Image (cartoon, rainbow over the protein chains, first blue to last red):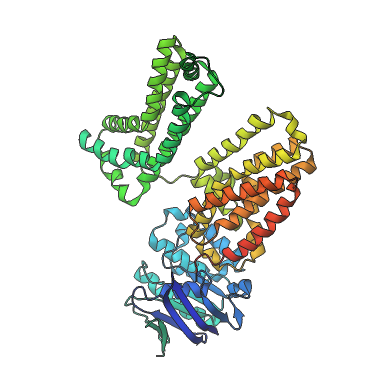
Length: 211
Length: 372
């Protein structure tokens, strides 16, 4: 279970988001909200990339108290990923496999379905934004995370890749019982994700809506 | 065509180059020209000899082989810097139009336009060249001015050819020499070293030049320093302080390209000590020299002092919203404090003190970059 207790996030004293209590059982969640409401900020806080007040836990493992074991339970893909340009896609995958204790077979199928194989040996600096996005999504699936956080996973993807990534999300949840939280403000057909629950960010707070 | 293209290229590259390197030019002007014309000589000079001594300083520009060699080296660096700047500008999205516009013109015309642009960028060196020609002809030193003129023209021409070649070739995809050497797995903690070798070669080269220049200038001029651990410690700390520019750039690299790694399950201690591998690489020439010059125990003491300073400054560099100017002020303060500690013979405390402090600061700063 992913829990937020007395969570607060501000930028330069301006409150962006306040969550007194929120507990998410493992499932597929879509985080919705207008631009600037704090979708990416919330996801980055949960991923451990941004500071916040007070507590975020996964199954009682606190992000602030048990930094290493918390980070073993959570993976993240950025909305607009940036990686060192001199590394190849293959080297990035090796890096994540090493850091997240994963294996190449975690993402073998995804690499095929996203049609990534042909460019993985080229340096990341030569990738288009769509290629980078696919790589970032594949990296987020490495290891055995309990939760995967995807910030705007559908932007810059072609329609085939959209279907492939939705299938992967569904598969991860059904076969590995991984919780998925993704943000999206786009109007995207989620045909492969009928059980997705919606979380709205309104008035600097979270509102859950079940299907 | 040439007038318009020249104007556009001048706006993008010439003005851009001078704007980007304004600090360097001000420093050079203050350091070189004012020392020739305005700096008073030490002590009393007999009346009438004031201009004579300034003339002697000025004439060394064309009579001293060391001065000429230094100028040739600096010119090479200047050419490298301007090539790097132009290539970086060309790769920017809003300048990509250059790859499908001016390269449609005949090669000769492209060469002519870019030669003019390069001449404009080389203007400070050309001014120096003209000055040396003037001095050389007055004082009958002809060889040095001719050499300098030919050298600068060749440099300008080579730079021009290189730019035209880049603009006209189809693919920019190439494997770098160090890429071939380090083709095997690139561990996470070595990524900054790869980045420096890939993107910051000139900064690295200058850092090494400044750091290694201290060795012949100080240690081989004052051999007694070999057994004077106190003074050596001060100088080694200065040598390592030269590398702080690379330390400051590291957190920029981390925040820009390795932000994903804040999600990696690495321990604080692992992250703290992991970076040492980069500094080991940066300081390899100094480390080799230290162990050949000093007693092994002394070399260890000096090396650890330098390393602990780098780690301390690295931890400080991760402070939220720390700008370069604030970082430099902290560097100055830390160096002053360290020199005081050394002055009172407590140099052996530098390593444990700096290491402890840097670990505590790193623990606070690494994950939480922005105020909550």
